[in-house]
Length: 88
Image 1 (cartoon, rainbow, N blue to C red):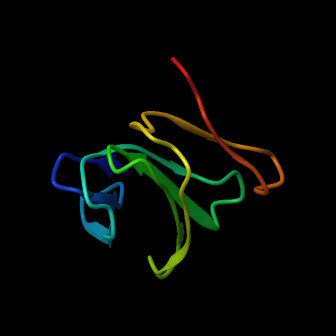
Image 2 (cartoon, rainbow, N blue to C red; image 1 turned 135 degrees about the vertical axis):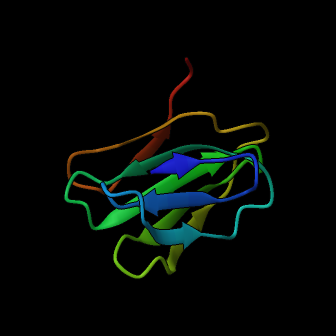
């Protein structure tokens, strides 16, 4: 998976084929991560939001707002219930 300054996150196969393009971010995507069970993809970036997508379809599941600055790194709890901004 890649995160880019084109406001997109992309999921690639191991052979290099593009599988999914995640849209919706209004600024650079700085972090993209699969949930522990691979059912969700979580992205964050310069638009101050955390975005959650279905990992199979790429459809938006939720948008979490509340930050007033870049969300440059994220982590996911083992049960997929909590998402956090990491300050490093």
